[in-house]
Image 1: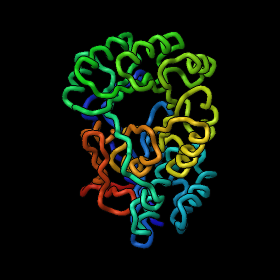
Image 2 (image 1 turned 90 degrees about the horizontal axis):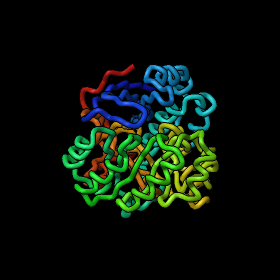
Image 3 (image 1 turned 45 degrees about the horizontal axis):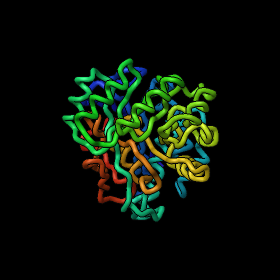
Image 4 (image 1 turned 180 degrees about the vertical axis):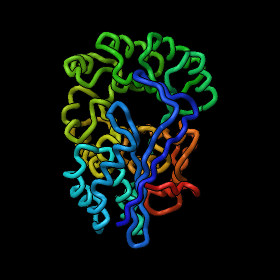
Amino acid sequence: MKLTLFPFELKFRYTFTISRKSKDVQPLLVVELQQDGYSGLGETADNSYYNMTVPRLMEAINAHRSFIENYTLDKPEIFWQEMYPRLQDNMFALCALDLAAWDLYAQKQGKKLYEVWNLDISHNPLTDYTIGIDTIENMVKKLQEFPWPVYKIKLGTQDDIAIIKELRKHTSAVFRVDANCAWGVDETLRNAAAMKLLGVEFIEQPMAAADREGMKAVYKQVVLPVIADESCIVEEDVARCHGYFHGINIKLTKCGGITPALRMIAAARQYGMKVMTGSMNESTVGTSAVAHLLPLLDYVDMDGPLLLAEDTADGIRIENGHIIYADRPGVGAVLKPGHSRSA
């Protein structure tokens, strides 16, 4: 296979703020794998919380360039197994390669990826749209400028209840709340009780991942479902989340791609847990890959391209929460003209 790397820095439409940080630009890395006249694309994101930068991602992949370029892709799962020992300390890099491999594999069969898996897309969940932390006035403004059926509201401030109360005055849409580890036990229980009355569907990662004792107490008493994010990174975490969360949010970038995500979904179902996939602010390349998992999910947060002022590719479209697949085999993403700065 021929390997090409495309680093990007894409601007956000608005400053993106969560409980931990704010940012105006999202660095990303797109990976292209070419074989037999076909081209598969994958993507991974820069993320300071996990100490991942685009230079580090490129270095990790380039360290195995010789192996990759001498590899003949047959099945993506086997490629993942071959790459895992080489990249087990960098699942973000492994994700980009895995997504590209699945895209290439489906294209060679002349099928969309969900067709390869024989999935029915007729009942796909809607994606939410994220409202980042800001002044209450600005959060209301963002909501009004982007009417949507489901919102994810980033919280972790001194005014969390006031934010939800004010936003609720302006829409009847479903609310989902993401505290990004900002709360404690009492705050989580108190906020959940208030937010249930305000039409919040669930709370994502209310407490720090390390506070398992606190999360166990929350799980036993909380009146809203709680979904793991920072507590569920790789496959082994699914079992660790059982009895502590009602569901898991799978980030392809964090877990190493589609191949382990499929196993995580199956494991969560065995435990009777809800399943969601989330966004790391990927562009249309990574988001198009997530789209093919939709029939397997309860919830999805794949609004990355909507939050960015720029994009890397044409692929899936998002209309009022609904995902419209590109009329192409594979995941359906193709780089936009002019995006040829490879490394």
